[in-house]
Image 1 (cartoon, rainbow, N blue to C red):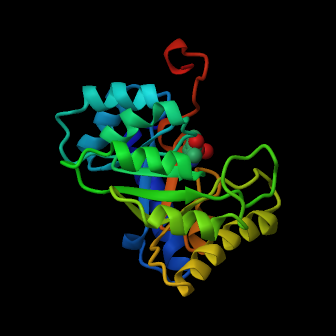
Image 2: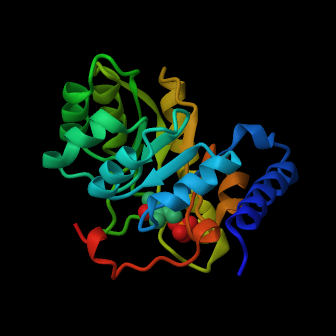
Length: 236
Ligand SMILES: *Cc1c(COP(=O)(O)O)cnc(C)c1O
């Protein structure tokens, strides 16, 4: 069994190599360690090694781990999962980032519920880049209007776009989905936005995503191992 330290080193090495091979600086790419379904001790262990950014998908898990790890002052929580409008408050009060905003109502609630004592909540709009009906994310057509509305809200700072592409072994098809997200971000910037973030790439495809401009890769399995979704406490 690989230790979490060696898994972490391997992932950092992959990021460095991928950045070098496309002429980017590895320091421009943030690793978000996706700790969903893994206990707070795993987060603490990786934090103690120096990892700072962690991603969670479930509101209840974020609440639990946030409480258990309140003694880790530099820990940065990224909420990356689907968000229902009746569950925004705990996220607005705990997360540093939300990557998965796909409609205005969610952003409005987060903006209203973000405590004034905290820094602005950093947010990304999740875009459906595969065109699959089942996928969450706003459509590319809806994006400009949604981005304008979110940028006008208090309490939030719109940083960029996030996508989960359709899983496929077809590398050109995958690359095209990452490239589309980048194109959409660049188009918004031409229209006057200042979006610096492309949240894309996971364990299996982070190299491809970095090649297409990812600034934040969200990596779970390659760091923590396979997830066990049968654990009762994460079904909420
Ligand atoms: C679970 C998850 C990840 C991590 O996926 P791995 O394949 O385990 O690296 C990344 N992003 C989102 C939105 C996820 O839900």
